[in-house]
Image (spheres, rainbow, N blue to C red):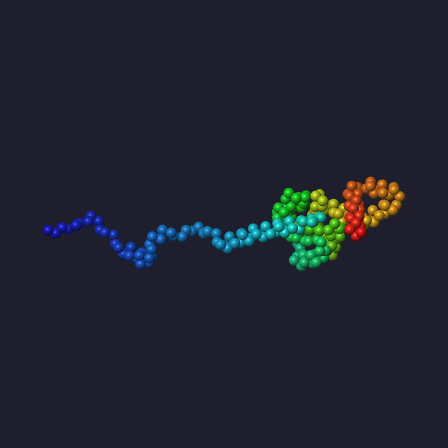
Length: 228
């Protein structure tokens, strides 16, 4: 006796599954459709890494220039051309270095050092002078000459740090007229050769002048001992 099976609903067509199987060898992977949200590209990641590296290199460069440094000065360079920067660098003595760096990076480099006093300059566009000689006036004079020749009156010093103290633009005259080592020697020798009243006058001079005189005299004695 034959038995006939009747279904209440027809079986679904197999055409779609066949089509999917032929078009996609592994149909289970269909669940991973791309979304509309794009992930950051590798180029963006690389650029961010390079930018961070450059910032770190700049901070390290500034720190290296602070070693054996006597004075740091900031110059407003807004409007400078590349050619002017090149000419200025050539005009500076070997003991003075010019660095263009963002205020935030310089501020990070001077943090927790004697150079923190330069922080009032941390605004605007600054180029930084690092002076590696005690002859401060001679180190600052080339820029003054350059400034005058190029008629850059608006591009003045915005400040400086010397011996842990901040000097504003109005204080630069004191830095630019400081006695040189030769002047200190001459003053010291002159005081020793003249009557005692002259030496007393030297001792009554401002404390800074007295320190310079004594320091120069000590250096002179050390040089004589080495030569002897």
